[in-house]
Image (cartoon, rainbow, N blue to C red; front, side, top):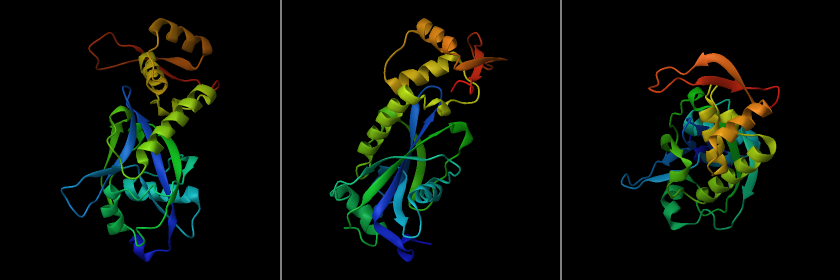
Length: 233
């Protein structure tokens, strides 16, 4: 069913900053919006208007599933964005005129943040998403509306929660090396860490537990695989 035939609230939307870690890079989930002019390309965070009969959390889950096929993901509100001109940029008008019954309406969006294990989820584009893909957070292009601002503030929130509440380890796969977890720290904190001191700190804090397994299919000496110590985290 198209949005135009539903009871849509034209003034409130939800946008989702979904992060994943591939052992090398921190990635964010983006969609390519369908444009009437096929020569034009516009990227965005997964997001859309809410329905009048749903709550914000339910809307975020529905929108993410509608656009990317992802479900069962923990989404957490982190901020509302209400600049009166946030959806009035000329670059966004073509999309708005094609998919919004009231394209000139002021829209306040509630932003959500999620952390997922990339191997557990296989995004698939649908609805007005032409494509859905993971993008390195350091190479994100210009996005629709104010989505670059939303993404940057989501990264700030992730960094703050990582330091103060140890939020972020959800990005790691079930088994990982000490090198992988150091890379995660460096990416989120945006700084290089001394290998020896980092490993000493991690093992002293007992954040991880060694398994009896090692890497396979690598050219170098296989490293021991670790798992998170949920009794500490």
